[in-house]
Length: 196
Image (cartoon, rainbow, N blue to C red; front, side, top):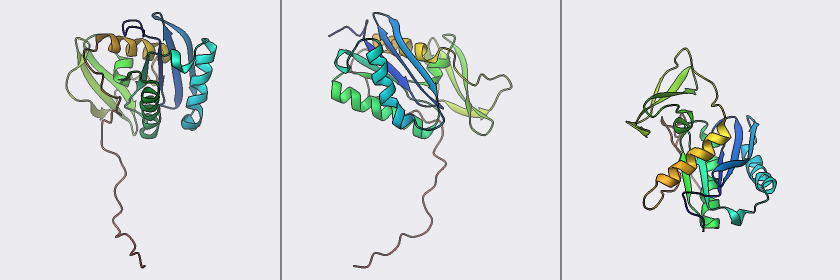
Protein backbone atom coordinates (compact mmCIF):
# COMPACT_ATOMS: atom_id res chain seq x y z
CA UNK A 1 0.00 0.00 0.00
CA UNK A 2 1.27 3.49 -0.86
CA UNK A 3 2.34 5.71 2.02
CA UNK A 4 0.01 8.51 3.06
CA UNK A 5 2.96 10.76 2.23
CA UNK A 6 2.38 9.92 -1.47
CA UNK A 7 -1.22 8.69 -1.89
CA UNK A 8 -3.16 7.90 -5.01
CA UNK A 9 -6.01 10.10 -3.90
CA UNK A 10 -9.42 10.86 -5.37
CA UNK A 11 -10.94 14.06 -3.98
CA UNK A 12 -14.42 15.40 -4.71
CA UNK A 13 -16.92 18.00 -3.53
CA UNK A 14 -20.61 18.78 -4.07
CA UNK A 15 -21.10 21.41 -1.35
CA UNK A 16 -21.86 24.14 -3.89
CA UNK A 17 -23.62 24.36 -7.27
CA UNK A 18 -21.07 21.98 -8.81
CA UNK A 19 -19.44 18.59 -8.88
CA UNK A 20 -15.70 19.04 -8.65
CA UNK A 21 -13.12 16.27 -8.49
CA UNK A 22 -9.41 15.68 -8.92
CA UNK A 23 -7.13 12.66 -8.94
CA UNK A 24 -3.72 13.07 -7.32
CA UNK A 25 -0.92 10.60 -8.07
CA UNK A 26 2.78 10.85 -7.28
CA UNK A 27 2.20 14.30 -5.81
CA UNK A 28 0.53 15.84 -8.85
CA UNK A 29 -2.99 16.18 -10.21
CA UNK A 30 -3.31 13.79 -13.16
CA UNK A 31 -7.01 14.34 -13.91
CA UNK A 32 -9.60 16.94 -12.90
CA UNK A 33 -13.23 17.85 -13.49
CA UNK A 34 -15.36 20.80 -12.49
CA UNK A 35 -18.94 20.82 -13.70
CA UNK A 36 -21.31 23.58 -12.65
CA UNK A 37 -24.78 22.33 -11.74
CA UNK A 38 -27.48 23.63 -9.46
CA UNK A 39 -29.21 20.23 -9.34
CA UNK A 40 -28.28 16.67 -10.14
CA UNK A 41 -25.12 16.23 -8.07
CA UNK A 42 -26.38 12.92 -6.62
CA UNK A 43 -27.02 11.46 -10.09
CA UNK A 44 -23.81 12.81 -11.64
CA UNK A 45 -21.17 12.33 -8.92
CA UNK A 46 -20.35 8.64 -9.46
CA UNK A 47 -20.30 8.79 -13.29
CA UNK A 48 -17.95 11.80 -13.07
CA UNK A 49 -15.64 9.96 -10.63
CA UNK A 50 -15.62 6.85 -12.83
CA UNK A 51 -14.77 8.96 -15.89
CA UNK A 52 -11.94 10.62 -13.98
CA UNK A 53 -10.47 7.25 -13.00
CA UNK A 54 -10.78 5.98 -16.60
CA UNK A 55 -9.08 9.12 -17.92
CA UNK A 56 -6.09 8.41 -15.65
CA UNK A 57 -6.10 4.68 -16.50
CA UNK A 58 -6.92 3.70 -12.92
CA UNK A 59 -9.55 1.56 -11.20
CA UNK A 60 -11.20 1.98 -7.81
CA UNK A 61 -8.81 -0.58 -6.32
CA UNK A 62 -5.80 1.58 -7.24
CA UNK A 63 -6.84 4.32 -4.82
CA UNK A 64 -5.10 4.57 -1.44
CA UNK A 65 -7.09 7.52 -0.03
CA UNK A 66 -10.08 9.79 -0.56
CA UNK A 67 -10.61 13.47 0.13
CA UNK A 68 -14.03 15.07 0.38
CA UNK A 69 -15.34 18.60 0.75
CA UNK A 70 -17.33 18.86 4.00
CA UNK A 71 -18.66 22.42 3.66
CA UNK A 72 -19.99 24.73 4.79
CA UNK A 73 -22.30 25.05 1.85
CA UNK A 74 -25.46 23.50 0.49
CA UNK A 75 -26.93 21.12 3.10
CA UNK A 76 -27.96 18.40 0.64
CA UNK A 77 -24.83 18.77 -1.46
CA UNK A 78 -22.56 18.27 1.53
CA UNK A 79 -24.44 15.14 2.54
CA UNK A 80 -24.16 13.70 -1.00
CA UNK A 81 -20.37 13.83 -1.16
CA UNK A 82 -19.74 12.94 2.50
CA UNK A 83 -22.01 9.88 2.24
CA UNK A 84 -20.29 8.82 -0.99
CA UNK A 85 -16.84 9.23 0.57
CA UNK A 86 -17.80 7.24 3.65
CA UNK A 87 -19.29 4.44 1.56
CA UNK A 88 -16.33 4.27 -0.81
CA UNK A 89 -13.81 4.35 2.06
CA UNK A 90 -15.61 1.47 3.75
CA UNK A 91 -15.91 -0.59 0.56
CA UNK A 92 -12.30 0.07 -0.56
CA UNK A 93 -10.88 -0.13 2.97
CA UNK A 94 -8.95 3.13 2.56
CA UNK A 95 -8.95 6.33 4.61
CA UNK A 96 -11.10 9.34 3.73
CA UNK A 97 -10.32 12.82 5.00
CA UNK A 98 -12.72 15.75 5.15
CA UNK A 99 -11.56 19.14 3.88
CA UNK A 100 -13.51 22.26 4.83
CA UNK A 101 -14.28 24.98 2.31
CA UNK A 102 -12.42 27.32 4.67
CA UNK A 103 -9.28 25.21 4.22
CA UNK A 104 -9.75 25.35 0.44
CA UNK A 105 -10.20 29.13 0.37
CA UNK A 106 -7.37 29.88 2.81
CA UNK A 107 -4.49 31.79 1.21
CA UNK A 108 -2.28 32.27 4.29
CA UNK A 109 -1.35 30.32 7.42
CA UNK A 110 -3.06 32.87 9.66
CA UNK A 111 -5.99 35.22 9.24
CA UNK A 112 -9.74 35.22 8.63
CA UNK A 113 -11.40 33.33 5.76
CA UNK A 114 -14.83 34.39 4.48
CA UNK A 115 -17.15 32.35 2.26
CA UNK A 116 -20.48 33.35 0.73
CA UNK A 117 -23.57 32.24 2.64
CA UNK A 118 -27.26 32.64 1.81
CA UNK A 119 -29.24 35.81 2.56
CA UNK A 120 -26.34 38.31 2.23
CA UNK A 121 -24.38 36.59 4.96
CA UNK A 122 -20.89 35.08 5.08
CA UNK A 123 -19.35 32.10 6.81
CA UNK A 124 -16.16 33.08 8.65
CA UNK A 125 -13.31 31.03 10.13
CA UNK A 126 -10.12 32.29 11.77
CA UNK A 127 -6.85 30.41 11.21
CA UNK A 128 -3.61 30.55 13.18
CA UNK A 129 -0.52 28.77 11.86
CA UNK A 130 -2.62 26.78 9.39
CA UNK A 131 -5.09 25.50 11.99
CA UNK A 132 -8.64 26.71 12.70
CA UNK A 133 -8.77 28.88 15.80
CA UNK A 134 -12.24 28.97 17.28
CA UNK A 135 -15.54 27.83 15.79
CA UNK A 136 -16.81 29.01 12.39
CA UNK A 137 -19.33 31.87 12.48
CA UNK A 138 -22.10 33.40 10.39
CA UNK A 139 -21.65 37.16 9.80
CA UNK A 140 -23.02 39.92 7.54
CA UNK A 141 -21.37 39.59 4.11
CA UNK A 142 -18.29 41.82 3.59
CA UNK A 143 -18.26 44.08 0.50
CA UNK A 144 -15.42 42.29 -1.30
CA UNK A 145 -16.08 38.57 -1.20
CA UNK A 146 -15.17 36.11 -3.95
CA UNK A 147 -18.11 33.95 -5.03
CA UNK A 148 -15.97 30.95 -5.93
CA UNK A 149 -12.63 29.36 -5.04
CA UNK A 150 -10.03 29.44 -7.83
CA UNK A 151 -8.54 26.07 -8.91
CA UNK A 152 -10.99 24.21 -6.67
CA UNK A 153 -10.29 20.63 -7.88
CA UNK A 154 -6.52 21.03 -7.52
CA UNK A 155 -6.78 22.70 -4.13
CA UNK A 156 -9.13 19.98 -2.87
CA UNK A 157 -6.77 17.16 -3.86
CA UNK A 158 -3.59 18.82 -2.60
CA UNK A 159 -5.10 19.97 0.72
CA UNK A 160 -6.58 16.50 1.33
CA UNK A 161 -3.18 14.92 0.68
CA UNK A 162 -1.52 17.42 3.04
CA UNK A 163 -4.05 16.66 5.78
CA UNK A 164 -3.44 12.92 5.37
CA UNK A 165 0.34 13.39 5.48
CA UNK A 166 0.07 15.38 8.74
CA UNK A 167 -2.32 12.92 10.38
CA UNK A 168 -1.04 10.96 13.34
CA UNK A 169 -3.15 8.05 14.48
CA UNK A 170 -6.55 7.05 13.13
CA UNK A 171 -8.17 9.46 10.68
CA UNK A 172 -11.72 10.38 11.75
CA UNK A 173 -14.51 9.72 9.24
CA UNK A 174 -15.50 12.82 7.26
CA UNK A 175 -18.49 14.64 8.72
CA UNK A 176 -20.49 17.60 7.39
CA UNK A 177 -19.44 21.01 8.68
CA UNK A 178 -22.55 23.00 9.49
CA UNK A 179 -22.08 26.57 10.74
CA UNK A 180 -25.69 27.04 11.78
CA UNK A 181 -28.62 24.85 12.67
CA UNK A 182 -30.96 23.75 9.84
CA UNK A 183 -33.74 26.17 8.87
CA UNK A 184 -36.36 23.40 8.96
CA UNK A 185 -38.40 22.96 12.12
CA UNK A 186 -40.36 19.94 13.34
CA UNK A 187 -44.07 19.92 12.54
CA UNK A 188 -46.22 21.58 15.20
CA UNK A 189 -49.27 19.48 14.48
CA UNK A 190 -49.74 16.22 16.32
CA UNK A 191 -49.23 13.15 14.14
CA UNK A 192 -52.42 11.45 12.89
CA UNK A 193 -53.89 8.75 15.07
CA UNK A 194 -53.44 5.30 13.59
CA UNK A 195 -56.57 3.24 13.94
CA UNK A 196 -56.01 -0.51 13.76
